[in-house]
Length: 203
Image (cartoon, rainbow, N blue to C red; front, side, top):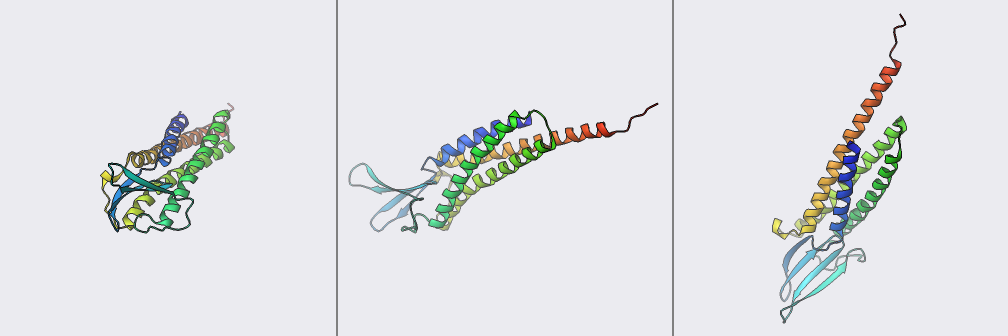
């Protein structure tokens, strides 16, 4: 029962995290340029600059972080932080697929043996890595903004940032319930073994 609840939390968190990293506007801030102010929108994989135009519209310049080898605009984004953030996001999404695949295999196992407990422990450890990795993504993005000398305000965060934070919370709930599942199965198995090896009175 605990594992089923954990699986539901993990599916919801994985869907929310993937949706968040595919959306560019995690946070936005304004930097003063040489001629006018520039509004920067940061995502996990893209950096977009909103430039004022003579018309009522604004022109947008976006670049992919993965395709860059260095940062040409040190006042809007930092290469080391951005590349680490994008790499961790890809790793977290890939690890989520692996955990979902392993969970599907676990659902097919009927007998709860020692090998099954080790298998469940591996899934729990991978869920822990998933939780830490998802948290590191938005922590790095906030750290990059602080490194640029920009004061953090909750109004600068877009809905993908809050969705990513919620996904981290979902991974945490999945980890907690999966740990409960491991402890419950382990305790049940130990009780069965104790009853099996308990000496019986022959008289």
